[in-house]
Structure formats: structure tokens, C-alpha cells
Figure (cartoon, rainbow, N blue to C red):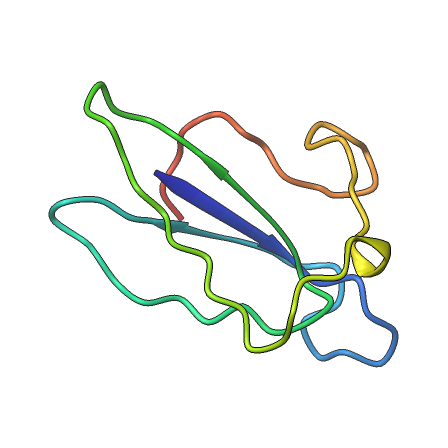
Length: 83
């Protein structure tokens, strides 16, 4: 799986930078995503994959923003790449 992260927060040191993390059998890990970071996942392999999202506060659908993953507002290329 490819996990893409993007920070567009005002005053953030990482503002405007897209990051990607590749996860799978050979690279399983716990990823902590801070609040207000855009994130999405893309499956890359043929085998089923599992992601567990564990929140520290109750879910509130009014607090969640959604954006098309291909939106020009997030400068990320969803094709598979490393680096």
C-alpha cells in the first residue's frame, strides 16, 4: 500500500510538502498521523491489505473534510514511485 500525506496548515514547517510511505508484508509499521494532515491510501499489490485506523477521540463527521485525491490542491502523483 502507498500512504500519502500532505500538510497544508498555515505556519507548518512541512506546509506544501507531500510525503509517501510504502507499507506491506516486508514493511509493516505503525504510522501516527497528526490532526489536520490530509491522508489517503492506495493498494498496490494483488493480495488483500488491511489498515486499522485508531482514533484517540470519538468520530465526528462534521469535523472531517474530504477532497478528491486527484485534486490540484494536493500536489501528489498517485502513480507508484519510491522517494
